[in-house]
Length: 165
Image (cartoon, rainbow, N blue to C red; front, top):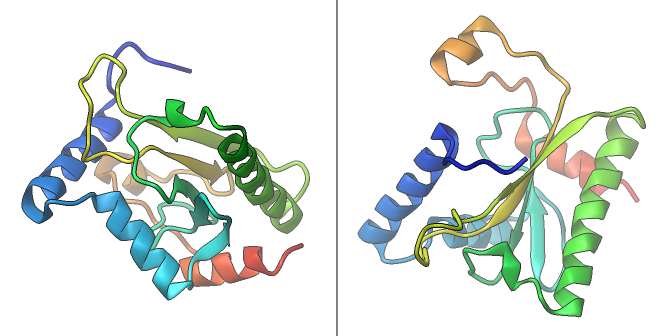
């Protein structure tokens, strides 16, 4: 679903990325990607152009993010057949691992985060995909506070998925 407005959660993500960029003079998401690749603890899989990992402060069990390694704010740069193939490979691979680990009837939400099309170029933003398996139910605390209780450890979830063929 595409929206004619910027949802609150996306606005917060964009504003946070802008503040970080203004302070550090570099992309927040590039720093996260570099840290994840160097630690390897939460990596699910990677190829030449993309990396998938369980975020450090994941909101949900087995929440998986997929990022291009090259900094870009717009997913429409995927106009090279090789990069399209690598993106498909890592996305399908992550979903396949989730299905094998959590069951064939797994339902999930896949969200594409890209810069708002009516906005100017956003050098401080980095497009990505978030996959959220629907394993837990929200509680009143989650809904009222905006803080999520995740009963899994991201490093354990990533290790479990990494070991699946």
